[in-house]
Length: 168
Picture 1: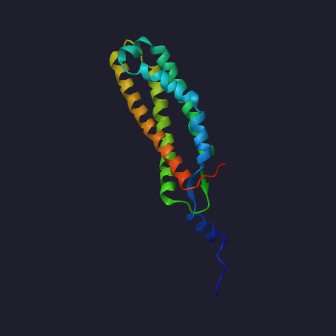
Picture 2: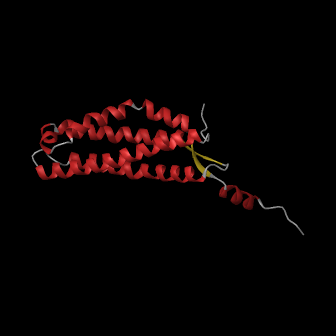
């Protein structure tokens, strides 16, 4: 006797076809419109090039790190709320895997900048070795963030090329 699949079996089958996809048009808008994030990074970079420069501008550097932390929280929230989405259709599997990996990096990147901002508050500018250590950590964060952002741009372009975006 043949039985119709149960609702649980139907849901399990549907879940195996779910893939993380990209709302390429909206994700591109998030990237293009986030001038504040770019401005913060541009303001921090010259201060982070040398420990003495950072020490001379320590209160500003600390404030900028806190602002960057807050801006990245907003940036990642927008990307996750509107830039990535799960779609119950088959999409190009590699793009789905890439999207999942990139979205997964948000928590790690945010944790890094949050910890840097917190550590900066506890460092005084006369502690040269602590300033240098914090700057080194910031450089590693900045490098990881730049790689992440470049990978997201590539994903957007691939999504548009493969016409799997869900935007206008």
